[in-house]
Length: 139
Image (cartoon, rainbow, N blue to C red; front, top):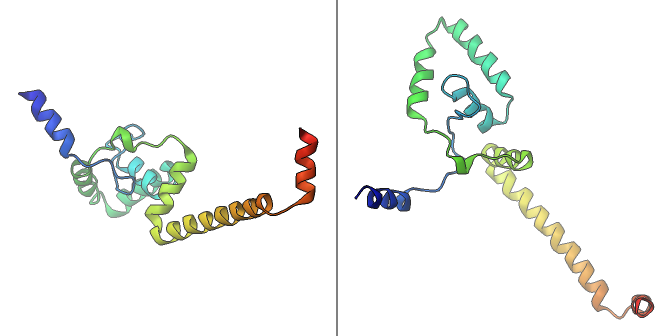
């Protein structure tokens, strides 16, 4: 009975979103909020922690309840959302920061790839005597 419930729950769960804010308990110190913010924004986690400590002192500690509320409300980062590749982390941080800019960057990369592929195709398919001579020399 319990296995049926668990398999049903797994089927209805949404896959981990790479653009959502999660607590990062793996890299966190207390509840993983600062580490999650660092992962989400792309800032260094040490900088986030220093800013948080400064905010605690400046607010006289009144910000601490918000930290703990965020710690209880924010979901843990699923293992499928953890990114080990630095280039992939930077990509998803860029998507979170500006989805339109990320989409236009991807579009321009594909346009460049398409242009290069068309250049190669035209070079190979046109009647090119020097290319034909090179191919014959390779045989």
